Image (cartoon, rainbow, N blue to C red; front, side):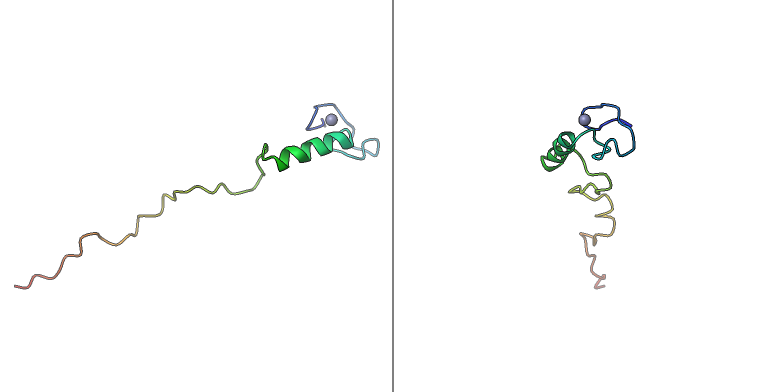
Length: 69
Ligand SMILES: [Zn+2]
């Protein structure tokens, strides 16, 4: 296991109470990165302006009237 902030190897025990970070400082640095939007949030769905499925069921732009004759 390595500290996500500085990459320092840590042990997964009480020697590193801030795990997975090596220290409280690295934990705060990582938190700051999150708040600054420098990291993508895992599981957050990417909201894109265009949805490909839209338009498949749009009404016909040509409403053909019945033949009067
Ligand atoms: Zn660190």
